[in-house]
Image (spheres, rainbow, N blue to C red):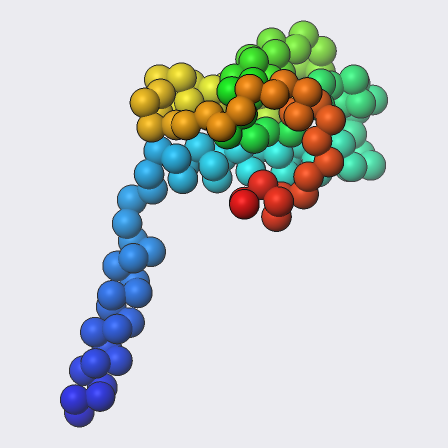
Length: 130
């Protein structure tokens, strides 16, 4: 009986850990990964409009200060407005930009400002985590 109560307490504690509200950083990190993955899927999709090939490259590293400029430029890109997937992606990018410059402004720490790293990066999403 004592072992059963210990097991229940342990499982309850594990559930509470996952029930904690997301931090500003975790929200920015998850949204940036979601945007990067959506962009990759859009680029590799066979049923996509040809204008998608002209979109600016969208690799996001939230630890790089240049990501703010990258997001702003992507949202302002004038082409592909008729493609629903691109409009959705731009809306997510706009949300991430807003979160980063307003809600999380004081919580984020930028480790670099190397803009070329966002243009030439060939990192996978596993490497982004580290």
